[in-house]
Amino acid sequence: MTLTGKTVLITGANRGLGRALVEEALSRGAERVYAGTRQALNPTDERVTPLVLDLTDAAQINHAAETVDSLDVLINNAGVYGYEDLADRAALERHLAVNLFGPYALTQALLPRLIESQGAIVNVLSLAAVAALPISPAYSISKAAALSLTQSLRATLAGQSVGVHAVLPGPMDTDMVRDLEIPKTSPQSAAAAILDALDKGEEEIFPDPFSQTLADSWNGGAVKALERQNAALLGAAQNQ
Picture 1 (tube, rainbow, N blue to C red):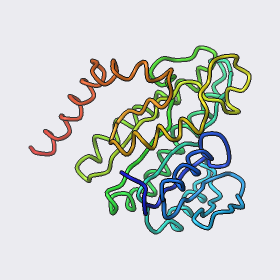
Picture 2 (picture 1 turned 30 degrees about the horizontal axis):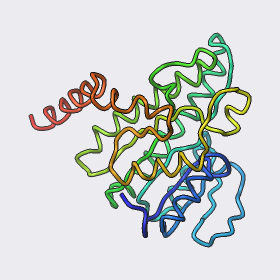
Picture 3 (picture 1 turned 180 degrees about the horizontal axis):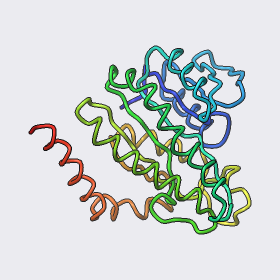
């Protein structure tokens, strides 16, 4: 999935990794980039089309689906992160609304375009999806659920030639983890690594030095093997 001449939609495109992904997609020859943000952007590149897109707003998601007449790559990047206590149910619901149900709703709305182009869905998750961060349990739970969504989409859309990719980054130097005194990778470096991996067709994308230490064990491990085994059940059921 090279981006030359392609149409891409990126959510959370106003800052951090989202903005870096917009810039990287343009540098790789994307014909059009829809930049989804909660506040309208004023892009300087004519190839960028701004979309006011709050993932918790069904009307805005429907408007995006009506606006985008063709699409090759959907990058679900927008997300929220907080340090709320696990006992705070409202915090968990907020995280699920943005990090799980938002990408789910947008993907379903744009799915006809992606099936038509035999395109790709890229869900930006976190290593917290596979090993919870106790300091941010609501975030971890929402990203784990989004990983399961990604795996489910991958299996159900395989027969329609839509690729589904999970990005599993470690800490990045963005506003989300500004206060954490830990090594972080730059959004620009991560964006380049994500699109490199998409070009190679990698299902799980580890875009930074910290996450890359897990790549080999993940790709050759029991969890990935079980995912493939479970996905085969769908094919067997459809053939009966």
